[in-house]
Length: 285
Image (cartoon, rainbow, N blue to C red; front, side, top):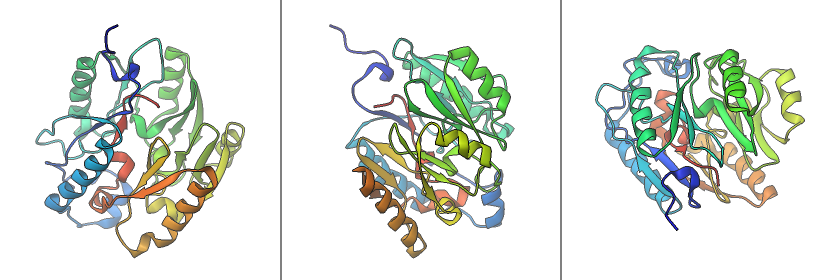
């Protein structure tokens, strides 16, 4: 019996990461960065934080590294693709970013995924990858739209790959991706920043999952920008400002038998990122 050629077929959790060698804030391409104005990233500190996250994650899963390329300031935020949950096919959709400064990332993502035996498809409309398309179970996904990813893109993905996408319309410019507003806890439960998405979207989410409400402040501090690996929920904690957010996350996790783990990736917030932005799954276990 041959070993699976693609992560999509493996029984081990698999993720992709890119080190922040060339991270920068020259192009301030989101509202959070513009709010911080002239704040600059300490690249050496960021690398140390990223490496700590890598060490934690690689003890729990197989982590593939996409090499960093000079000139791609946001490449460490691995949202340049999304792998679909299709047991009979190895399918990944390449992002079509709203900002041209990120186009180079999509080219590298396609090459990387092809080397892992994924069939890759370029979305024809604005679509920003895994941060805006989250699997909850089977072939049911939540899709973020309204700020970056377009509804047309979600319709194209749904019809092309025969999956169900529950559209979630976001209404806060600071929470511009779905992963700023919603986090999948398990097949029946989600964390949602209920003040940052529209009311009709909330009703649609409630039909699919139990909502564990979090505040706008929690969301701005990255509570939804977490990462799930088995029963562990990885989240960033870097200062006393995270105190109430951490209490809320611990409470939600305790109610579902999940275990929170905190890893400081505070430098990522200077780019408008979070811990979850630094990792993209290659399978769903």
